[in-house]
Length: 226
Length: 250
Image 1 (tube, chains in turn orange, red):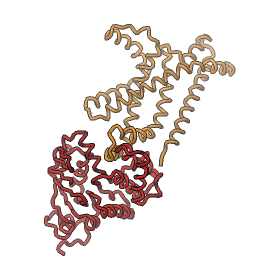
Image 2: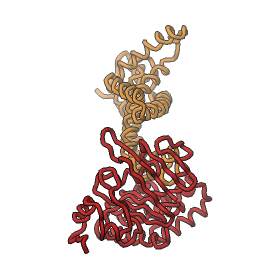
Image 3: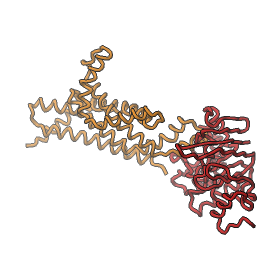
Image 4: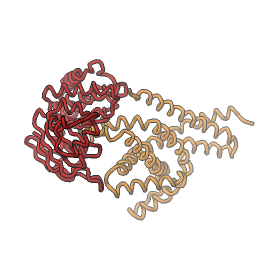
């Protein structure tokens, strides 16, 4: 028996926790962009050790399942911090650990995306910019970045959806986002209405992903030139 | 005006330039000829530091620098005096024809926007693109794109324009429109170095021809010298191969 009224009630009950889901996704996104940019510039730079380090990092992250990394960070980070700085961070809100591990993970895939987009623009664009008197930095932000951004858009849209969905794992270390809330509702009902609850949760993720996808599609069409 | 001496450049084990020296006077139109792989493009790119030579000296008016160790400030000075026209045009794909030309003025040379637009329009009019200001490179033909490339170069008022095989990527029927623009510039006294495979252009428009092979200058002289009385066997061989029915003994 499927209780449609419970389904809708649970959608309603879960919705307020979108706040946490968005918070995790937004901060993870920002940190991933910064970390990804750093790693991408390492991979593209002339510095050999920098290149190797960046590549090793990306490879390492590619090989770890998200949930495994989440637990490693959750249990490992306090250990690391206490042995290095003699500070106890065990009491820190789980949301921090979730953001750190998701950023570590997505920073690597963002780096790959940025590297690919940068290379797709082509060396000639930079050379032309230098030849008319722009500095390397001006060439980057005025000529290369705007083009690389358009190249990266479709992948970026996907990455953001992936990041949003990976956030669901955070419930496993106790973050109460929409997935955490759904788990809570199930346990409040002593394991009842499981299907109603998960479908309610899925519906919310589906709407979020669709909106993201549509938004990026629209942005892509707008920025397409020539 | 411009003198480069003993330029060496290797990519890994491949020695592309083995001590090349050339000299250009104001108003010169110099053609650099030679088979592919002879180092002509690398030489041209070394002049404005798109390629960093391993050795060599560059004298440009009052600037005198070592090509290998030139400072950022020197490079900037030299790039301000030169402009480059690329084989593949390399127009900024995210900018319109007009913006392609104003970019170097507004950002590279700090020209006020209104004045830059004015100068850019003049440059585009000159290459026959007064109807195409707001077109993106993707909406232009190859010949039109290259003409925007030339407008971009002339707009910054360089002392010398470096052309790197400007017509090699073009359909045969579009080559003429680009060469005509270059002829026009030559007539007005623009100093240019042109790496090219267009023998007719080299013969008719330039006042100096440099023939390179294997990373060295084999022979140089007036177009007449090179095309009708080449001294070196290698030059004769090359001309026989690239010019149909060529007979240097005439």
